[in-house]
Length: 395
Ligand code: GLA
Image (cartoon, rainbow, N blue to C red; front, top):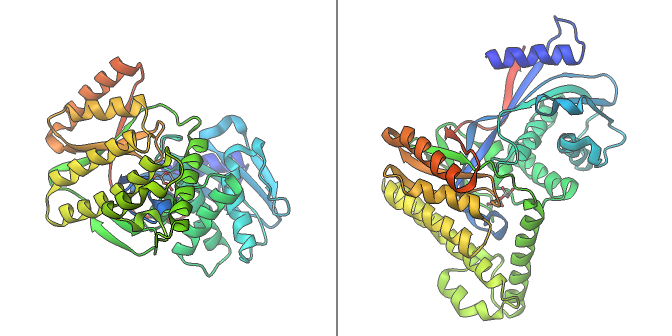
C-alpha cells in the first residue's frame, strides 16, 4: 500500500497533476518457470508460476491521441511521448516500445482505442534477469487497454496479442509461456500449460517444508535475444527436415525419446540434433515432474529439475559459466532439493527448491561460492506464486 501511495504521488508530480486527481492503478507479475524450458515454442508442456512481484502502472486517460509514458526504472529517459497516429518501433523510445507495440497490435486486431493516456510504470522485477520484465509490461498494458476502453476481450486473447507484439513489433521470437503465466497466474499455484493446445490446469505449489528460491546471477543476458532466435530457428528447421522425411509430427515435442532416436538421422544439421533431443527429453521430464508432484514426491521433482539444467547445459547450450556455477554451488547445499536455470538462459536467474530451515545458509554459502568463482554478486529472492495481471483500484 505504501508503495502504491508513493507511485501515485510520483505520477502526479511527474505529470503535474492536481493533488485531487483520480488515478487508476494496475499490476502485472513477473514469472518463474519451474520446469519445461525452451519447449513452449516446440509444442511442449511447461510449468511456470506468476510471482508476487512485478510491474505497476499508475495512469489517467487523456482526451487527445497522445501517450506520455514515464518509468521509475529508467528515470534518465524522462517522459517518452508518442501519438496514436504514429505507432512505429523507435529505438530511442527504448522500454516504451513495449507498451507502444501493444497499442499497435490491439488496433491492428480491430480493437477500438481512440485516445491516449499518461502513465507511470514501475517494476520491481530485476530487468534482463529472465523473470520476464518485458512480458510483464506487455500484459500489464493489455489490462490497461481493456479497462480504459471497455474492450470485449478475454485474458487468453490478451496473452496471445502480447506474444504477437513481442514477436512482430519487438522482434523476439518467443513462445507463449511468459505472457500466459503472467496473464493467467494464480496465487499459491503453478500452471501446467500445454503450449500446443493452450489447455492448462493449476497445480497447488505452496510446499509444506520448502520454498522456491530464485538466484539472480547478475550476468545480463547480453546477446541472448539473437541467440534465442537462433535456437528457435534451428528447432524449426529440424522440424521441417523431419516432416519432409515423412515423420508424422506437428511439433518436436510430439516425439517420445524412442521415436526421436529412430528418426534423428533425418535432421540435416548436426548441431540441431542435441537441440531436438533437449526438446524431446524436457517434455518427458515435465510429465514425470507432474507425476512426482501428484505423488507428493518432491525429491523426484527436484531431480528432474537438475536433469533439466544438465540438458540445457549440454544439449541446448544456453546456460554458460555463471548459471552453471550458481547451480553447482546450490547443489552442494544439503537443503537443496533441485536447482536449474530458468527462462531463456545465457545469464539471468536460477530457480531452486530449498528446505525452509536451510534457506539462510543456502543464500550465504551459494552467494559466497558464486562470488569466489565469478566475481559477481548474486541476489536471491523467495518466489511466492502470485495472481495474474489485474487492476488494483482507483487511488
Ligand atoms: C523466454 C521466452 C519464452 C520461453 C523461455 C524459455 O523466456 O520468452 O517463451 O521460450 O525463454 O523456456
